[in-house]
Length: 467
Image 1 (cartoon, rainbow, N blue to C red):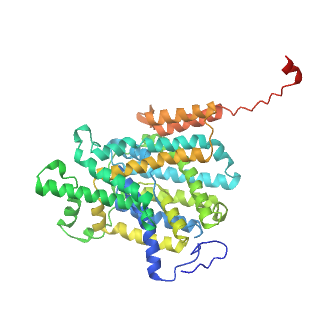
Image 2 (image 1 turned 180 degrees about the vertical axis):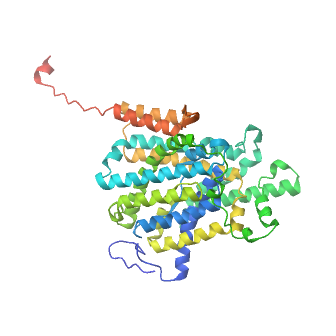
């Protein structure tokens, strides 16, 4: 691959292609590996379809690339920011409420498109005035820290209640945690781009060893951490579905009788506030990528196009699998490290991702990943989400010497992490405003009420000094 761009240091610019098939394959695989583990972790945690989520990531990215006129080398995949919202929607009416998930994601997509139209008309100043860093930073921290209990429960096998506590589960999770951190910190080149892949492989290997010892050596049920029944069931009566998973989509399970019209308010209040947070993240990711590829993506193809692409991709993904799509920082890192910004490479990666999603043997193997391993990785992953909120506050130099900033951040953090929810009944249906939404609203209101004080400059006159 030759550097044909005279304007920047990119090996391949946005509209350039690799010259060899082997290079094309390698570069595409790196993008798949960068998003794969994080992509499957969301459905693993919520209990939705892993194959459909992987397919939706590829489909969503292709939609984004089409709407942005192949000018932005972005990969979209499942968003962690909506985990709490997804949990609320999916649990409505007794659980497995795919229709509620799809409606929530449709609302998110609609909000993105509306914001895109407003931005096209009046710019972005209003958005940053409504959601300044002092509000967004702590809200992102709440999203990450609010998931801490979920990570720990998965790690120690107590997600279904305290009675499920299993000391053996903690070891594979801790191995996954440490290997992920060590790989991310000390890894070179490709390894540094896929720390979650390496971490989960190490955790899975540890769990496999414990399982084999428990099954063959000690006949101890608590040590049998990995459940291989998905693989066994898949190949028990082999047919076309054993190899091609054509029935993996969430909309195939809509008709479970658990959705009611009165739940719409709960769904809206669960998803809408978080969508504004992810819109701000969307802008930040595109600003970061713009610096990497030396092109202002907010101007060309333009923020309205990128927002609309992201939003419509999320709406489609919601129908297919129930997960939101979002820009992936890991893939921005791939572009930054490899200096390959070719959109064509990402298109090939999307096609390969969709094919992998339909490949049943791989998908059933992924389903055997024990919760304790994803829990161990999630300790880092959710911490990263929270830490990114802290990093945002530091980068923007938010002054916590100012009392107003302390009050705003304090209200958001305590309400969000403490789990403050608001519940009321509308037309016989219980409506719940999630703690993230409540915390965000409190932050916005406090930010509007507590105005910045103008510094009063007092000049001491000779007379005042004399007094």
